[in-house]
Image 1: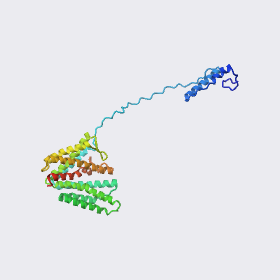
Image 2: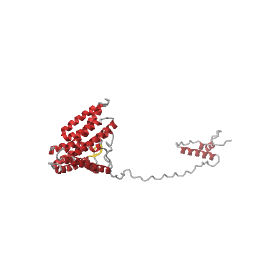
Image 3: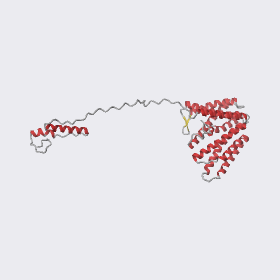
Image 4: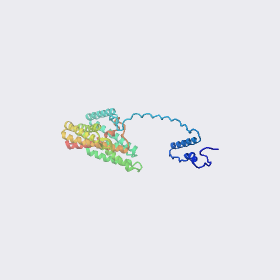
Length: 358
């Protein structure tokens, strides 16, 4: 006979029934988790074993050892702790840049004060190389084929004509160079003709025509001193902008064009150029006055900055950092002419107004 309390045989009602069955028919608590269900099962088995006269059922539960605590994380700096400040560094090789700059300065000064015509030759070489860099980058990055041959020949003729015949000769040479570009491009298929000749005329104006004003500065009796003033003010302006901007620059001047330029740097360029202009007009230019040098320095600082921004605009449109690699630490010739080219006509015009063209 199965004497388990869970048997299905009829049991008489009464106290015996209550004593035997009653304790086992109470509803089991419903616990949603697995641990609760396991506890209820063990309790039910204990009651059943006690009713049969045996010892309570105890399922051996394996002893759970405590989980080892993970190793403490490495010490971390507070989130609000800022990294140690890093020393500002120049973006180029300063040793190479200084060496190339000194070498170029020696060539320029030697040609200026020995034979003027040699310096005109230096301008022509710089113009031809600059045109080659510009047209090469236009073709590589934009597929624009500005004809180099008429630009190089016309650019050299433009500089020489400006030195020999002045502004009139420069304008005539500019017009003939533009015409030569239009005709030269006709030898190729008509596709992209307008784009190519437009770029060619722009290159003729941007490089050789503006450089012609340097040759025109040289034609005066104190021509070498005027050229030195022009070069010195431009270099001082760039140096002042770099030095002040590197040390104190916080507010961007034109972040979309040249993120490295700051308003503080522009103020430094103006201050340095005005001081240098006053000294140059007082001691280098015949008939010059210090107050004229202040105005000249201010104009140079503005034109040099605009020229630098204009060159940066072209390079950003082309997607390049430098126009070339000819000058270590500087880039290409065009990367050194960027602030010089638009400054040349400004200096020529102001000196012509202040002390004349003779």
